Image 1 (tube, rainbow, N blue to C red):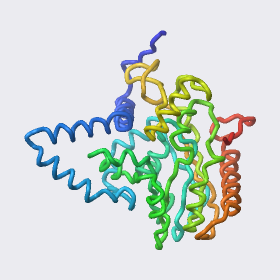
Image 2 (cartoon, one colour):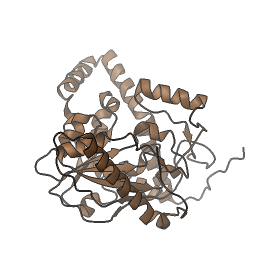
Image 3 (cartoon, rainbow, N blue to C red):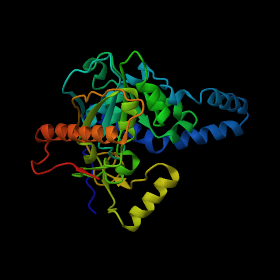
Image 4 (cartoon, rainbow, N blue to C red):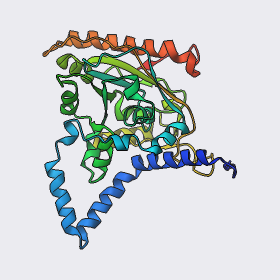
Length: 335
């Protein structure tokens, strides 16, 4: 394989953008392990009392990830996130105003490999979410596993990430004052195994838990499609039924997290590595679907709202695809 190296005269601002993305990728694939190792070493060192005190804090603070987390506006406005945004770049597009007297569930599609658009738009202020949607506070739901890792849990909560447990989503969308948004990557970890350039397959047909939650709490549904999310990484070929895919599915069921074997570019060369490609990400927030609170929704209620949601998501994609380089004959595929 011929390696394409980056030129030596790359402008400083582009170098800083790459550094920002290195930091972000590291936080997703290695920071949790480093935090866990640091905690173990602290407990085994002469400073073990600090480890013991933090362990006590973990116990006392165990419910925070399911009760809205602990966001930090300082962290959400770090300068590094602006360089992160400009690397791709990332943008957030509003189609209509959203009434802050309601609570909402944003269904985020597609999941992608590392949910770059979801993180950038809803866990930082780089795209001006609070300006576009005044009165709304977003919470991006993440697998509960990550909130059990010492130190790492505090870092991710500072950006507005919360546990994806049912109790966590219910807490957010049941707030009586309104103005709260639970952002759910509906396809979940399994969908990341299909994330590759040109892929438009979404795991939706059996994903109805968020629909039931919306009905029980009267939260309005908003379909969100992130153009470019699947263009950031390549993956090893893993068609359904292949040995690799069977192994990935098995590990996902055991560990609760998916393990896509992704690759893209490196820091100083463009031929291989785990940094994403520089491809634009445009996240379109669609029109809200009003939901009437139904404490005990029937299967028919769930099916009808699920159908409306799929129609709304399809509309967002079809109305905007021409603006983001998707061919006219390309359509979403739901499985």
